[in-house]
Length: 285
Ligand SMILES: CCCCCCCCCCCCC/C=C/C(=O)SCCNC(=O)CCNC(=O)[C@H](O)C(C)(C)COP(=O)(O)OP(=O)(O)OC[C@H]1O[C@@H](n2cnc3c(N)ncnc32)[C@H](O)[C@@H]1OP(=O)(O)O
Image (cartoon, rainbow, N blue to C red; front, side):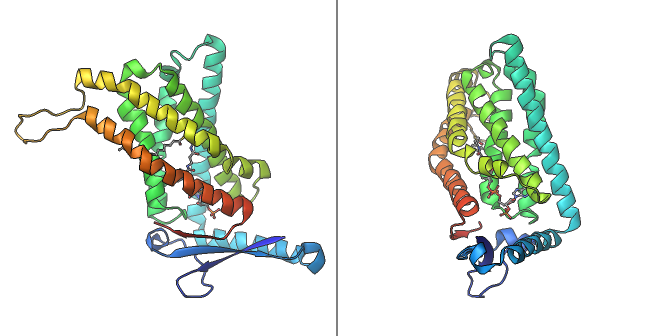
């Protein structure tokens, strides 16, 4: 039988770490979640009491979040789950009808662009403190997706039929259906175990597969970018500034090396915390 308690490790003893103000996500507060493992619910006979306290905790969490924020997040997560589901259905239908991935991106691009761009709001959610997530981690995750959608796949038409595009599209889609439905059911206090399990297990495979798809797609774009000189600014010009998109892409690819492991290990820590109740001490930002 497990029960969660949260304590701020700033020497303040047992103050609750989950406050919903902007300072929540920005303060360098060390959040420590302590799992109190009880001998067994049958032995101590506290099963009912513990369930009641879980419910109280959930109700307290909702109160702290505020009705408006909860309503907005519920709407947002339902809309995003629906959007990515529409995308999944469109991809499966396309493949079943055409039997090839060629033309797939073109057929789903509008939906993809809309919902992936809408996800910029996630950074706003962190900034205003209505979700307890790091602005930095969310920012890197969302900006790399926006970059892939707008500055790579949308802008460089010849690569839209690459197999690697399918690789990241499928990884993103499965991930997002799971993730947004996880948030929705959590907010509604009816989280099926399978969704929780999927949220914190699928990423183990989908994250590397998605990143491989992204890197291979950028790699495929390099010759076109070099040849066309797109998004590049050459000297001489009146601002005396030069920018080479080709080298920018090489630097971006290299930046996956330090950044991706951080996101992956963040998710592994979340997994240990949520599925196995391990004690985690982590800086929020
Ligand atoms: C300009 C160019 C820039 C280029 C940069 C290049 C470098 C990039 C390198 C890395 C590239 C990565 C590319 C990504 C590829 C893919 O996505 S591949 C597919 C697989 N992907 C994944 O599995 C993604 C996994 N990532 C995520 O889940 C998130 O993006 C995250 C930010 C990493 C998630 O972290 P976090 O939010 O901390 O985890 P959770 O456990 O889900 O949430 C923590 C708590 O926050 C609550 N919450 C969060 N969001 C919401 C919400 N929308 N609604 C309600 N609640 C929310 C959540 O419930 C948790 O609360 P508690 O349960 O109370 O703790």
